[in-house]
Image (cartoon, rainbow, N blue to C red; front, side, top):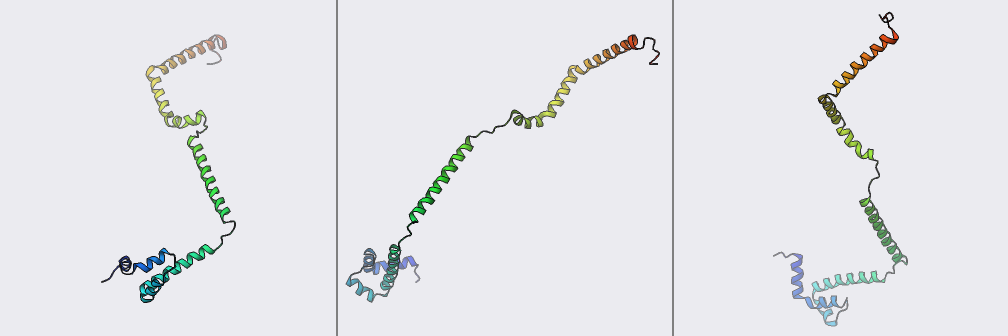
Length: 163
């Protein structure tokens, strides 16, 4: 029967939990009775050796003196991060409330381009329907008669030059 590592640890904890648990609770210090048990039980001895190596590593880490500027560098990095976040927040807030400074023509240009030819065509249709161009034709005919009368009267009374 094969057991998973979790099941093995649980089974081991039920069989030999006392000395190892006391070893962990006392951070590596064991009693004479626990030492005798670990000499007789290879599983407990292996686990105690692993716990001892972890404990020794932790002691070495605690014994190392950090560089003197470690705290200053950590604080500088934290402050730089906070400043960058604050700048980004202020800039984002300004952008969120910013309105473009555009001229009236810049705002109207897309609509003028889009609807300009349609408006011109509609205006031509309205002018044709209302008879404005016929009134222009009447004005042109009147202007031609006035010019002809002026030419007859003042420029060429006998029609000798223009014939």
